[in-house]
Length: 334
Ligand code: NAD
Ligand code: UD1
Image (cartoon, rainbow, N blue to C red; front, side, top):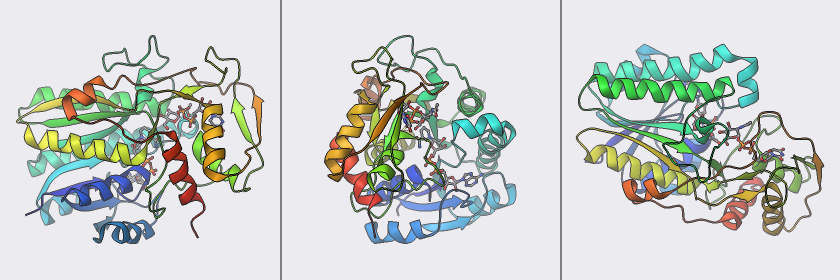
């Protein structure tokens, strides 16, 4: 019997790639997604890649009746919780929507798990919890802070998980702090599909390469970095997905655990490095302007990856050229 995993937000960007990795590792996946930022076509694409269409329920993680129905209908072994809102700028305009979706949604989900007697949980946290780095690479014990409501929701849910873990024996929890996920599945069948103008660098660069937007604006060229532009730890989304499979296995094998690990490559690249790698992948010239810094941005950020390697026996394998090649294949899909 294959263990059944509930994946919330499973038709979204990271959730869909993780569903592929889970199915390929032999798990049965049930997705709960309200389709606020994804479409059901993703389910067919996953079926095309893996040969198996995941079970799907359209619904909201804040809906108690839906959650109870799911835990009743399926013998679920663990929950991977991706569902939530993720745009930093929007979170400052609509903070209540962010606390409601990300914090209240997580509380509802954990409460339903408690009612169902289920205690294995993997949470999508973010390197944003480190705030402005005091030293690099970032280790998991670096002090945490948040400068916007989105980041604050991640801090709060991390704390809720720690409180829950300490309140009751038997919880197996992984808090995974993602660095900058980019790229797409190598098939070109699933990838990141932002609505409107992309907030993040890579989808923006991809749209300039296709000619959909005229130029990249490079936010800041006076940072204390090698070429003056911001440096980040970009990680291929399929490496990230495999990190989740390892975290899940670790949860399922332990009696109780609260694991907090970085999922990054440990290597930082600048904005100009990424533009150049994308030029190579696409064979296009990518015009750009150097403009003012984006408020709230940090100069540089990359992960210490030792803990993930020790605790999960996991290490990212794919480099920036593969990230850009796969993103380009997805961007130019017919
Ligand atoms: P995404 O928007 O592509 O996926 C989220 C999915 O959740 C979407 O399919 C959306 O329809 C669904 N959803 C949202 N609210 C829901 C709700 N209340 N009930 C049910 N479904 C809901 O985002 P993503 O990039 O795949 O991110 C997944 C998680 O990882 C998020 O929690 C995000 O904060 C976190 N994260 C993402 C990044 C990143 O760069 N993408 C970095 C760090 C952390
Ligand atoms: C952003 C979020 C962060 C989140 C992360 C996940 C902000 C302020 N931070 O991080 O909370 O965890 O996404 O992916 O939104 N850049 C440009 N031009 C652009 C877009 C970006 O030069 O059009 C630069 C940025 O200044 C930065 C780098 O590219 O140096 C990466 O930016 P982005 O992809 O938005 O990610 P982060 O800012 O690291």
